[in-house]
Length: 276
Image (cartoon, rainbow, N blue to C red; front, side, top):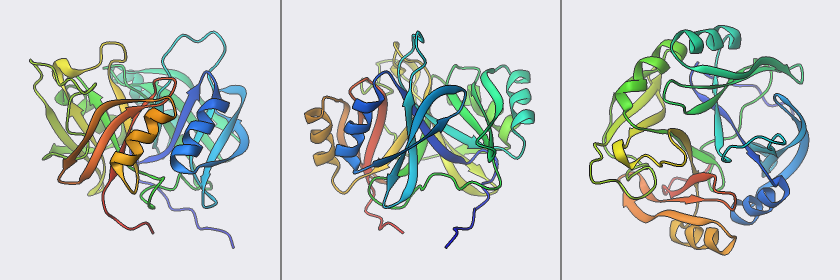
């Protein structure tokens, strides 16, 4: 049976990828933590192979090889949907961002680009009418939330509204509560915004002020559903990762901010929701 492809509104996170210095070790880490299996496939903007992470046969993410000689910290990259990747990339440039890769065609089914907002947070742009996005919000092992960690939320609000048509409104505490590196910072002035596309919540922005990690700067953070946040945080350390912000309760569930073996940050959260 062929699965119908749901069209994502512009600005909706529809894919996630990680470029690692040792992708085999990263695949093992996430397999042990989330139960992901892998299937080989090409990746955007690189001749190196990428491996699609699968959970119960559904694609949930992608892990690939960091280009040789690139000196940057590994990070999970969300791809935001666009009706026209070329137009979105041009708007990125006009609004003070940068485009590092593309737009380019991938596998004949997608057009993608890799860009950064004016504060330096990297993200992808993804245009497709024929290829399903990553499975999200489907239970343990799937991504349930994407959040931009930045110095000042209000400074990037206009950028994402202009490029993707996202609306932002003040938010209460959501799963990303806490400083960018877990320290908070004495002079931090947290701002929280909820991002919506056509009235549907698709992510958030967390301005952490002086709590922004100095070694990483602004970045997008994915939250992965787990059955037990405390157990998942312990497992991260057993697998060679680190806990950046210990497990704590929020109105949206119990969450912890962690990093994998190479330092790529992400978060685990138990929301109590049943997977679809």
